[in-house]
Image (cartoon, rainbow, N blue to C red):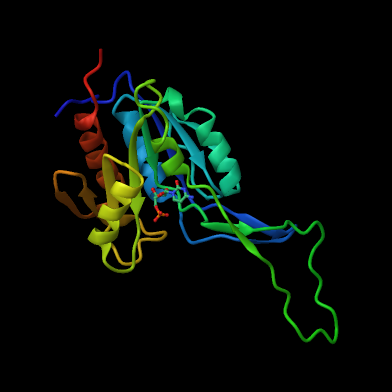
Length: 224
Ligand code: C5P
């Protein structure tokens, strides 16, 4: 094994949930802790890469030597990623991006009034798919990084992972094998690509991240 297999490479990573405001005090989010993405950032840095981490709202320390940009919403994460993705060799999308956001942001707190019978309702609108948009950058113009997607599913994991690989045109998908990995320090992963699958059994997220980084490094085109 090479000690610094990502020396001279740059890696962009998204991590954590996004937060989609409903009004100034409320919002939609999910239970992603960001731990897997932060572990990958640390492992990529250890492997010699220049690493930028785009983080949703999480309670985690920035790994040493990693450049970090904090965002709240999917639209902010999309902008932070797309504004620089073409300059990176690798893009790893671990963020649990909210699929939808409230269509309108209510300027003031929605108040509960005495006698109100009906609960308030609001419309949702779709968020952009950050990973699909990065994957659609031009390879011929040298703008498309090597894209790695994550898949968390409650059923038919392999089937959905393979569908995602094709739909988002990815060279590699990482499926979460653990039933509920949110917030945990360990996980089990299944690496899925056009050739087949490889399981990384239950381990600390940092050890899994180190293995994943090795797998990414060996798939990159040789440095010119
Ligand atoms: O389509 P689905 O959400 O299941 O795909 C998961 C993968 O796509 C993850 O890598 C996730 O980070 C990425 N994704 C994204 N932007 C979205 C939705 C998912 O980058 N809006």
